[in-house]
Image (cartoon, rainbow, N blue to C red; front, top):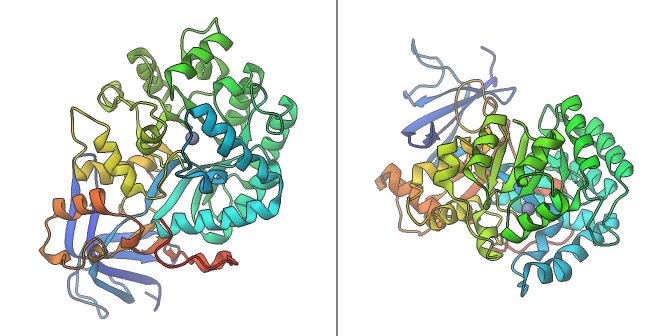
Length: 444
Ligand SMILES: [Zn+2]
């Protein structure tokens, strides 16, 4: 064993196993190899080199004994250009789109705006402990290309794509169908599975009303051909479903637009999925289509809430999404508590909340073999947390598993995140070279 080859991170480790099962190792060690893969995760046995028989060797130990180690958080759905639209109230959804969202997206014609918003966006993601994200950019090819460059520089894991809209979109954001497809295909060729697989492309038709069936059918073919993802929105409001029915009168329901076009499938992630029948959920599960559940956004826009019990009993996989900018927070911890608040009958218990924000998100993005928990062989994406940032009098050693997780879920935010690692590498937000200094404490 060569010196410096394996690094052990010693601290309290909480590792999600399933929606109901979580492993809590009070004095644990996460051993990571030089390639950034997890070698082992288990109790610390009090030894560095030379090693006792039966223990996992490591060459260097990072002492994090006062801290907590959990897997990196996975945000399955958010919009990069909408960063500064958060918390801007609109009287109605249309009013909000018209006054804030569309102008913010149109401004992405200017790469200086993309650079400014993009750098702050990725910085805030990292500071909030999000190590993997499903991101929508805008219809602009150059803006999307630049966003990929920023994601590459910041070291985050991202599934990202250029928004596609070829009908029912405002002037300035509406695209010509062939042009939209061509640019998306070029971006996919350039970025899908680059940076060691860290960056992936998602064909991103915004939602059924703004996309023609011609566009969607070609997206289905392209996704099949390239192995890239498809991300879109579905059934966010009852009015949207009415609109889909008006545009596609021959199709029985909202999900059939995705089935008919060939866009449904295991690498398709649909945001919201609130107003859907049991039959639609069943077909989603059958096709392996995933849901990005975005409760904060659903609160903000008064859209309703995703019926988690029905979604789960149909067997649909789902993870959490902040849906920034309708979501007001960049923190997955906020999303965890809102996932609980929106379910009026059954609680989302803390272990399940952690699962949804980590392994559940990984499954939603078809990355469960690579990230989401600390199984050997997966990439070392993890966070170092300080629970005292919730309240200084808490002592990590005195808290039960449930107490730690519920404090994170109900009171956690970016303050608790000390460091974020992706593939064994500590993310450095200063690598983005942001001109304006963001004052400490203003990153939520
Ligand atoms: Zn969205």
